[in-house]
Image (tube, rainbow, N blue to C red):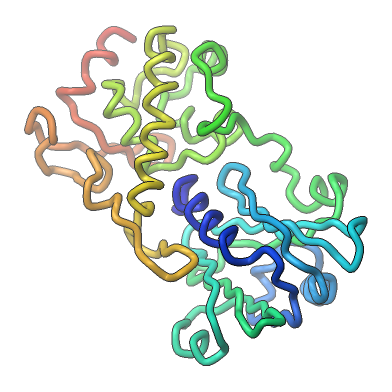
Length: 290
C-alpha cells in the first residue's frame, strides 16, 4: 500500500490543481525521506521551479517541473511506499493542524502547501534532471514492467509467465513484470480469474492469460473509481479516504464467507506475503496445474 489505483488517484487529484504552481520554499523535517540528491541540494534545486504536469509509472508519482526557461526540465518523483501521503493544502495553519508525521513541506507561491507525510518513513522523494540522473537515483526504475492500464496483452502476459516457476501471486507482485500491482489487488485479480495463488506461473495457459488481461485492468479501474483502498493510511490529495476496502472480494476477509460460494476465505503466506483466496472457487486451476 499504496498500489497503482491509489497512486493514480493522487496523480489525478494533483494534475487537476498543481500545474502552473511555482515552488517558493522547501522544508525537510526528516532527511531520510529524501532519496536523491542530498537533502540540502534537493531543497535548493526545487525552489523556483514550476509544476507543468503529473504522471505515473507503476507505483511512482512523477511531478514534472520546469525552470525559468523550457530547457530546464526536471522531475520530482515520489514513492509513497507503505504509509506515505501527499496532500495539497490551502495554508500553513491547515498543515500544522492536520499532520503528526510531516516529513517534507513544499510552499507554493500561491500560499498552498504540498505536504508529504509518512509515519513509517519508508517513502522517498527524488529530484532528477535527466535519464542519467534518474538511473543514478532509482536504478530499478528502468526495469519496471508493463503498465497494466495501457499495454497489457494476452501474448505478453503468457510470455512473461511461461518460464517462471514462482507462484502466480508472486509473479503478479513482481514489478519487473507488471508495474503497479500489489498485495491487495493481486488477491482480488486471482479470485476473479478463479486461479489459486499457489499455481506456478508457468502453468498459466493462454486462455487464462487472456482472462487475466481483462480482469487486471478492470479490477484496477474499479478500485480507482471507488477511490482506492484505505485499509490503514491511504488518503487522496485532498485527504479523503477510499472505499474499495468495503467491497473487496477476498483481501482482508480471512474466515469470512466467500461472496460467491460462502466457503470461508483462507489466508496463507507466499514468499513472505499473505495471500487471501477461496479454497473452493480457486481450487480448480491448482488441481489442473499439478
